[in-house]
Length: 40
Image 1 (spheres, rainbow, N blue to C red):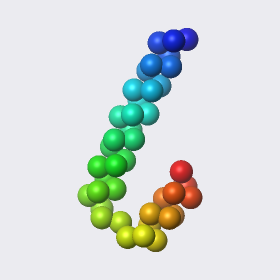
Image 2: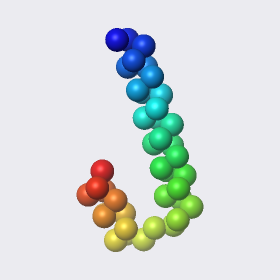
Image 3: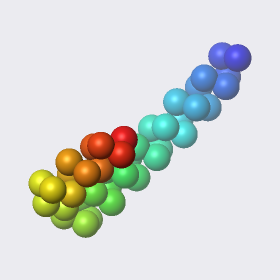
């Protein structure tokens, strides 16, 4: 159980960092930011 939590945390952190990088690359405007926030 404990190791599963660590694995999930690692996956979430990796995916989250990838999302931040792609958001920077696409240079979204405020409208797109609000839309992505609603999806999340």
